Image 1 (cartoon, helix red, strand yellow):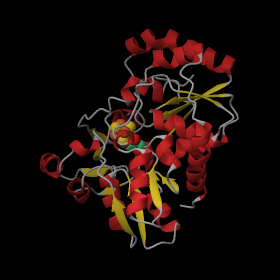
Image 2 (cartoon, helix red, strand yellow; image 1 turned 135 degrees about the vertical axis):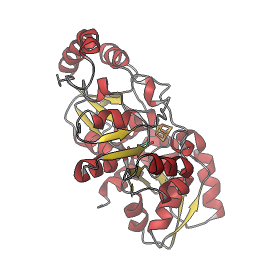
Image 3 (tube, protein in one colour; image 1 turned 90 degrees about the horizontal axis):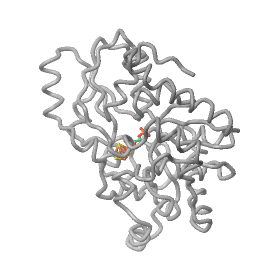
Image 4 (cartoon, protein in one colour; image 1 turned 180 degrees about the vertical axis):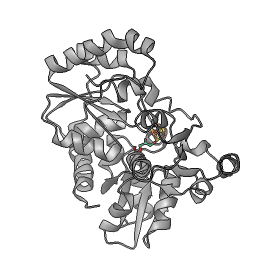
Length: 315
Ligand code: 13P
Ligand code: SF4
């Protein structure tokens, strides 16, 4: 078991210790691995996760693991992507309600209509989508490889779905012309440029780093833009005296526990979907093998092609 000393107060550690021990025992008996997204709460991220990362890292880890069971401490599209990347494994998601506003913003039928409107233009789909949407796509991408994926297609134009802000960010980094959709993340769309300018005024010298799901005025105010793991690596490398991570708020808690020399200014926008995942839910998931992620084989085969193609793109 990892140590939570210095991450949580001692009294809190004492309360959750029996649950942590149960999870460790269940993990061993199930031959399971827990993959945790960077937005998990510190008890999960520092207490029980075997592997931690952004969406791309989680998909890569899922593809490689030799564990028999994968528990996805993240949201549903991440569990589906893990299943697509490694179909022989049992993939569990502790709470089926852990969705995503981006995944809800588009359907397979929408993509079929777009293909009719723009014949021959390839479709790049953010992994924050259902398997049904992935199945209609040429290739997937994440926030950490989106530009490389778009450019890997060798076309002058691509349809890029569904996050309009990530799309605008990618468009600003490439010559490729992007046709966008209207999706957005309920967490990142709430940040504003004014809010960030106020941080700069109140905390002179502060570094601002943001996720590319934020609106353009937020990204324009930022010193660095990157995926969740990209943001963590930036802080680890640059060790700013004071920083604000413009993203879901558990991430600052997780990183702050490891970097006591950096002061984190912490606006708190929580993702209600990520917060469905709890230690108790993870223990129950391992104990009762629930909720197993299954994908209709006709959809899975086509969706897997889009995920595998993404994993082959060099970044
Ligand atoms: P990352 O792939 O950057 O971790 O982003 C996933 C996500 O859901 C951000 O809101
Ligand atoms: Fe989806 Fe936004 Fe939550 Fe990420 S933070 S899972 S993009 S709703």
